[in-house]
Image 1 (cartoon, helix red, strand yellow):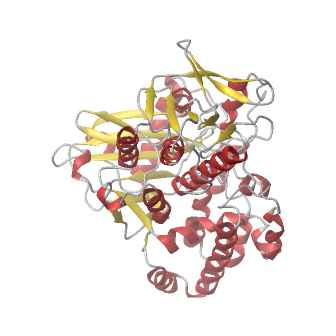
Image 2 (cartoon, helix red, strand yellow; image 1 turned 120 degrees about the vertical axis):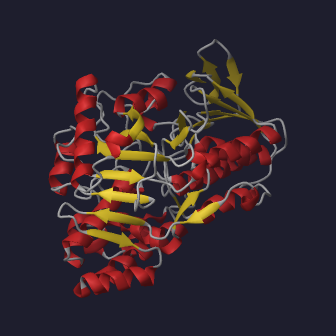
Length: 492
């Protein structure tokens, strides 16, 4: 546990029971604090959640785990063994990519196997692959030593100067142009251009610093949690209850009380007020101003992607379907022009298919499928019945073009999650899944800090805040935030 130990009697209220909120609650509870987690929904987990019907269970949020050692670190810091709570399975191959011309490419887990695959497909691109891998590693090493430890502007000596060690014309340049400089094969380019969507961003608008994402996937692997990713939340809830964390579901916070200088507690919709020495907000950063009584942004101008998701229950498991499959659209650039330029669902979407080989998620012989296409996350598009039906048609049309022509016919269950539903369920303006996008180096590396500069006693955790989105980053956010809370309390 980072930060000094403090005496019992201190109380923290966490507004939002997502992954970051639960992790920070457990860390503070281990330091002797009384911790209360209030969540507006009926179930904890935030965007890492589950939906169940007719014997099928679906993860509605993240579908893979990277950097598993960050998760292990949480359990270690709580004096628990990860293996006693969760069963992790490394995925090999990572994914299968299906192209508009029918070509299919499996990406193996091991780096050397991936280099060999590239060598057979495009021998001239192996050197470029190595160069991008080295650049991703340099960005990761810099981040590990600086940004993953604290917000760059919170340190006494801000580590921003360390960025000068990055190769200027590559890491600071356009992600897409950097990929195109080093990789000439169009099939391989598509794979690299896919990675910025992991943080809800466009490869044509974000900086090449996001090349850290493919590096992390090959350096640390892609993992699945047996029973579904929601098992992480269930495990943390079990620990929280056993350790005395107070968990309040269906408890919507309507105001974070403060006097203009310091927070004092949280007011719930049912009229209760919970006093607190520290208030930790675990939610979408765009919603924080309203809880504080500050003016809210008039327009959502920098929102990340949302998703159009179909949760499909099949009576029989399709043959030959990988755990992760990406079916590419015919024109990737046009797809992102539609998403971020025209702020609408694309005519021809790329579709991600998650088909876990996990018998616990479906009736005997069946298959729970998670289908997702990117959608705008700024609230510009209305999602009425006609728009939902048309988006669904486009998703299944793209899958049919890839040879998956009977999924819709064989489905006995098809539940739709669209941006408006994400916005309502998770209080995420516009339905953005990842908070703000990572377009430009400031948004990529300078996420809002974990400690308020305006109000003492107010802290923030989760994918909208430093160091960013994704399961490992949210867990790092919780570690950083807990350290700040304990450190500040020790100086009071």
